[in-house]
Amino acid sequence: MNGIKQFLSVSDEVRAAVEAGKPVVALESTIISHGMPYPKNVETALNVENIVRENGAVPATVCILGGKLRVGASRDDIEYLGKTGLNVPKASRRDLPVLLSKGMDGATTVTTTMIGAALAGIKVFATGGVGGVHRGAEVTMDISADLEELAQTDVMVVCAGCKSILDLKLTLEYLETKGVPVIGYGTEELPAFYTDRSGLKVDYRLDTPEEVAAAFRAKLALGLKGGMLVTNPIPKQYAMDPDEINATIEQAVKDADSLGIRGKALTPYLLDHIQKMTGGRSLESNIRLVYNNAALAAKIACAL
Ligand code: PSU
Ligand code: MN
Image: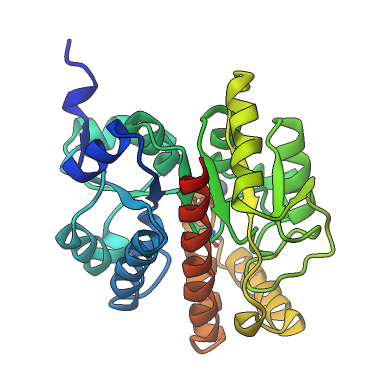
């Protein structure tokens, strides 16, 4: 039977960097196709790649194109993913077999970006926010596959914490059960994406890229499978007012519920709805925190 080559395509630049032991940072594509409007999404994705480079690492945007998991998307690929937007299927773990065998495209979530990164030998991945345990999950059982992936795939994910579209407390409990370390970068408090405050504590505060790299090396050395979640607070000047954003999120969650939006459609609906309700201000915060995470991830990749 055919091996993985049939379904995996790593760009020459990324392959050469991994082989030479150079720092590489993986980047996701759901944030491009489903997380932001065109053309801001393309502009942001290209800026993120530049920020990774400026901080000494090689960017590797992951996506699915023509039935291949692509690690190291080109400018044209990114333009295509951004322009096609919601018409690119959101691809989580369970979507891979059919999308790949049918030669389709897909926007990779945190889950599938981790899978692509691991297959290509990349250890560090930067994004905005990760999926988690949704509010009301005790009834809906809506728990993002991102948490299971963090439990089993050896890739560090640098994010700005979780949006409070999720139940942050339950998300932390789930990560604890699954043995995933949750690190606060320069903070004891779990950042909540648009704000640097959630009122919840992270497991450990680490203050330098070297400390984060050392913790991840220890995990790898012990053969403890799974990733590590590095939560990096949004810079203060770009943070939103917690009362305002939390009220908006409450309303968005209610609207989703009354419209019966469920499953893989829920997260993209909430993100889009919040952006519209805040008149694009949340989009600006979102972009800034992604830049901040890309820079940190590149520094950690260099330290590794
Ligand atoms: N949360 C965000 N922004 C995002 C996502 C989540 O603040 O763009 C995307 C990521 O790709 C994440 C996915 O992996 O949504 C989670 O989707 P779900 O909740 O359906 O598992
Ligand atoms: Mn879900």
